Image (tube, rainbow, N blue to C red):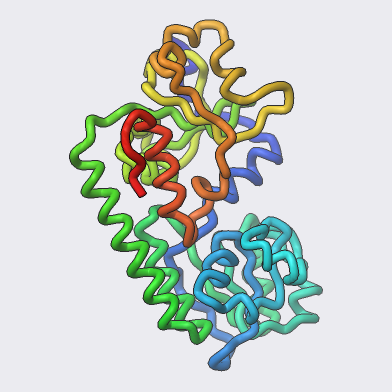
Length: 297
């Protein structure tokens, strides 16, 4: 079979931006200090996942800037926009002069160096697993002066993840194909955040045979893997994404299609954005994979 997993690709700009969002998150990297921040610092967040966490620990009123991609919670809309995800306006940052800038891996690391050159304290994070979320919540709590709420939320998430892990050990694993995009076809590999979510929900990601985060695939590859569940993480303009999957030539032999186990209309931010709503995302994914069983939470 040819072109099963494609590695030399040309990624459309909109898909590249989408994949950058998948990378937003959690484990703290070395700090670039430009002076000690006050107890209640004024903060600019350059990542949607960090913005969600800052609001979740009660520090939303300390945000003085966000990106256009920071759309949750609703209160975030009141915070001034200082650029797009990974591409902040240096002019606006210089004008706002926040005490701390929090970000993830920027599209252009040169931008990060320029932020530091402005004399701003920069804190950088990256997220690979749901297990990293409690860690960053605690660190954000220390940065913002909200340790009590942050520690409590971190503990709640840690306990919730343990409950899902325990439940998953007693399930007969169903194989899952998470279709992140359909033109070209993309899914998550063994190193992806989405693969970890599927595992916590008691499923087995068919992309785990590839030691990557996210990668392009062919339709033949999916047909060959014959997943039990198909979940579409995007919206289709012509019809529902699930209907498009069901009517694809050759896909009628896939177990998920034959058994009517193809799903869409997900809130992508619950599955593709590491953050404080991670347990909600895992619970919804569990209900999707094991729709004939009692909901997890």
